[in-house]
Length: 66
Image (cartoon, rainbow, N blue to C red; front, side, top):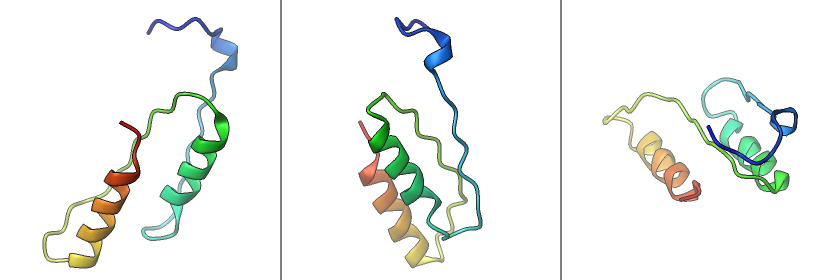
């Protein structure tokens, strides 16, 4: 990885919690406030039978930086 910033200025924050607890919103708030480039990793299973979950996944994807 090439970066002009020293390694000491990098930070890793892991946000954990149960499903539908607001982890993504909290992580996005932290990321927006950092003023730095962010790598966003979200995990979760796709359940085609759960329409609410599919809607939430779509919203999450739309909020991610390009």
